[in-house]
Amino acid sequence: MSATGEVKRPVPPDIRARKGGTPLVVLTAYTTPVARLVDPHCDIVLVGDSLGMVIHGLPSTLGVTMEMMILHSQAVARGLSRAMMVVDMPFGSYEEGPEQAFRNAARLMVETGAAAVKLEGGEHMEATIAFLTARGIPVMAHIGLTPQAVNTLGGYRVQGRGEDATRIRRDAEAVTRAGAFSVVLEKVPDALAREITQAIDIPTIGIGASADCDGQVLVVDDMLGLFTAFRPKFVKRYAELGQEADRAIAAYAAEVRARTFPAPEHVFGEKAPGK
Ligand code: KIV
Image (cartoon, rainbow, N blue to C red; front, side, top):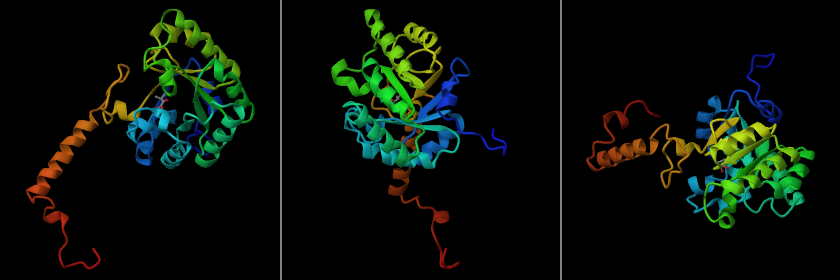
């Protein structure tokens, strides 16, 4: 709360300070109405590049562009008044080097009002994350399964099993050193996620990781049962809105065909001009 009684929106240092505290609640949103729904309940709302698959029907996140991220982030920003907004940097917008990353991250922040950007990659992104954070761009890192690297990883497999755990540990240390204010750990073994959470001093945000992470993130359409193309093991469905929508749309179609919709209360008479 501020002195005026308004709820203070968190900024990246507030999120960083939540290490080891009450778990951070993070959900995605891609539109204004969904942003309004998640805003009262979340610390962070992520405009994830998952929007490529969830909203645009793309086969992966690789086809997502800066323009798509900006348009959806502007819509989400209009629906938020409490939660902090983080925007994903899309594939191809930051991997060339720190200068390219800065140019595009700055554009995302200026044109959308985001408080921070998220980018995928660990050790090999250390210099880029350090470059951005030194120049006023807070970075949420993303390691483990990094969906933009689906072609080099060979699919959406669990990362960091067995000897591969060393790679993920090194990634976590690198993004921490670089100044990231938090890190998403996606699809890594429970014990490894717990160990990394204890080892680094920035909040870990798990997705398919561990209940011992400093926070959790889910794709909102997954947890509401709206995105049904596939369902990763780490998704818990808190509602089945897809099924509910199907029932409602089928009822509408049947009523239109039977001429029972619109009913008398949905149509207009001659009286009350202008109505
Ligand atoms: O794009 C996205 O929605 C994400 C989250 C699943 C972490 O990166």
